[in-house]
Image 1: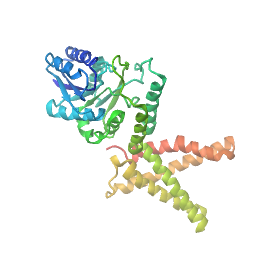
Image 2: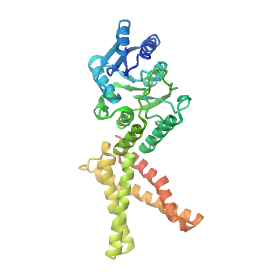
Image 3: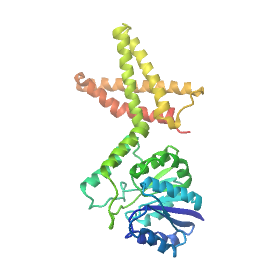
Image 4: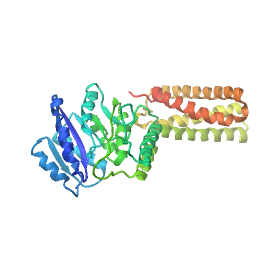
Length: 368
């Protein structure tokens, strides 16, 4: 029988925790091949949350309580993981909120997805069958949609629809591999970092639809200004796509500066100055992308394959140049050449950048 551990952090949830405990353990008869364990990680609640848990421990021997300092959501989960691996050693861990916004009935769906081969299953509010509360204030809906859109764009990953969902199932081996990276984050950024670091380790990710309910008791702990700021901070430092765009911008400046120097100041032929500047920019882009943008799967620079990958990088870069030249010629012929700069910006932003990022990922820095 496989062990399932559900971890739920709490702070002042006395009006919700009793019902949550009962609903979770009522599922045991429906999944006889799994052993349900529940760990409540309480951050010194000021109400009767811990007393409620201790009362129900008499009925449910696999109900556990871990009392910790109030350090934020991420720290609560990390301490819960550490306790879990030393005390229970679960096969699967499910994270969920204790305020009943995450309905325990979905635990059965998470398990089905895991049994079908997924390593990480996210409860999504934004796929068919999922929903957020209709009575949410407009600004809360905006922050929820906007936050996830920013993350999806920032990672150039549209397969995952709900990066900030706190309801997810993760195989224990995944958590063991990523916990050293994720433990430095808290709040919603911890949830984002967990998915990001898991995907970087080739986990098989999936989603199930969930109907997210608004809490009946207590107050939400989210701070919206901090939420958006922390998302941007994480993306800028961790997103390979954003780093790739930054590197491309640096390459453009290098290309332009060297071309200007060689043509205007040293009086090289224009074609020669262009070739030299372009190749120097390509070398710069390749090296910075390898050691920064795609550092989590960087190429071994001491290997002979490093040279072959560099040549392939040149070939892909040539393809981007051909796309840009052909696009400018087509748009210029159809709509006139006075707007060539607008055409160039659109082609680079909508075609060249996605094309390059996809091919670099699939061919140059592909996952082993």
